[in-house]
Image (cartoon, rainbow, N blue to C red; front, side, top):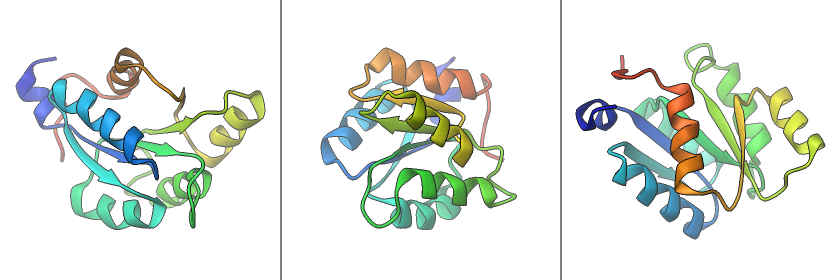
Length: 133
C-alpha cells in the first residue's frame, strides 16, 4: 500500500490504557495511517461520527461502556455496520472470542500485540487504495 493511500485511511483506537493507545498510535502512524484515539466507549461514539474511521480497534475491558457494548452499538448503526471492529484483550479464551463475535467484532487481537499483528489486522480489513467516502 502506498503512503498516500495509507494516509487517507482513518483508524480509531479505543482503550482506557494510555500505554496501549500510544503504542497502537505509534505503530499505525509509522505505517502512514491517520489515527484517532478514544479513552472509552462514550468518547469513541462521539468521535466516530466526526471522523468516520475505516477500522476500529476496541479494548474489551473498559470502565462505563465495555468493548462488547461499544462494538454492539457500532454494529447496530446502519452507517457503521460494515466498519471492521477488532477487539483488543489480554484474555485469549474461547469464551471471550465468542462473546466478541456475538457483539459483532470482525477480529480478535490479544494484548500485548506486535506491530506486525496490528498492521496485519488493518490490512486484512482495508482495501488497497480505499479512501473515506
